[in-house]
Image (cartoon, rainbow over all chains, first blue to last red; front, side):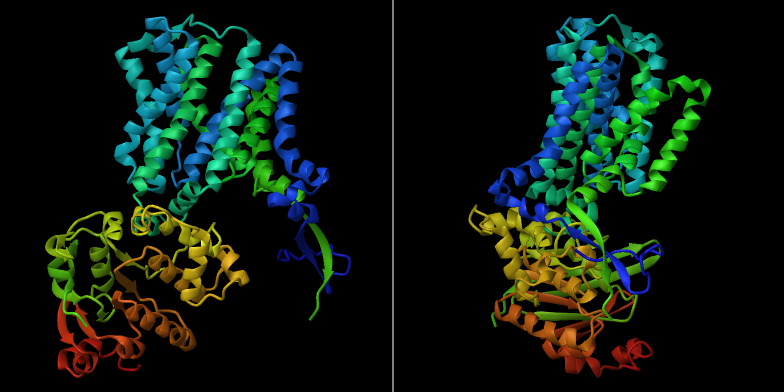
Length: 347
Length: 252
């Protein structure tokens, strides 16, 4: 790999430069060669398997309070994954709350008015929410960048006002007393499964040829059009996938809290996924998910500070984004796959 | 050369606000012909390309391709029919390695249809195409991220991306711009080879010397109107053409 920046603190600054190279084991464990030895295989599997095990242990070992924090962390993680998926297909979304809220309300309505079990309302909320949001955003798919973003920002706030004004579905009171999922253990297991399936599944998708087209749309949508591909079809499909992911999170949360109301359309659900992506690192799906795992527990830890909580939270957010502008995930991945050394400059 | 008309353009017009970018342009393009489109800056060349490829909808006029009226069709449908274009401002798929840039057109429905339902090894096809436009096979450049490629390679990549669609008609929007004499000289045989393969090419170009060597016919635009048409040598001696170019090409 190419050499990188010069550093004034270098041992002998004039004659040396810093080099960044792929680790031998990284190269050795690529492709089928990972089966060379247990060490290569472990190197390849560790970053994928260890987080799953760690979260499992954390989830079932921690006290109930932290189990609930983990649960909402993964809900926000799903929203962050959903946000990054859209971003990778060139759609910057400022209204993840739309997906979350629509999914939450569909599940709540089905459960409250029709008495349907959560095991049916959650999948229906996810799919129906994805479908409804896709239909809502279909007319603005032609908009790009900031224009698309503005519409997504406005839609959830608009729906919130509609519910308030027309007093439908419980109006400002919302709907409470919904059926919970049987048992906290099952609840936790369900959200974990959804989180990992979404993360690994979408990451896999992005490396396929289908994902290649999505990246192409992000880089230069006109070139994709002139390659004979209907980009609006691709965008609508991604909107549905990302919408369903967000709507699942909402539908799940409705039953976890046994309540659905106007706050599900609040800005928090739109902003936090973006902050997670900024902290964790854009464009990898894993980055934003990791970002949620940093931000949500951090926000809980800061509860002791009372009124100053938001101030400290904001300062930490700035520290993260200024200190590691590439994102925590990209930083960790670089350290894991590459090493740095000082090399003589031959001139 | 067969005399079959592949693309027929009638009275095409497009205005942006008060500016008549393309104002009643007509021409017909025969199969396996290389037609140059020249004209001073702002004469409507790129708008014409955008009209032909569907990125801009015409206010009036008609575009008939192989007997089918394709006026106002969406860009991807026109591309699907076999009209491919390059962009003057080259913007590759930055995140992807050079050869993966071609995989995007290679998975289009058109390529699948022409290949008889099976795609084959797309990476290999992509590398073949890159070789065709002058990349060295198995060189580091092919696997390099498109974002770091030099301009000359990006222009070739742009042409290869166009070819990946297996087009019948290629519209090349200032393919030679920003290239050195040597780079242009190495691209000319590539285009000549495409003509031998039976492609039909429309070249919008400012590099007249190189264009005139390979073009069968040239049309000249000025203020959105076609002011001359004919073989390269006879067009350039016309008075109004010289007047239109005076100042912009006189020092060339």
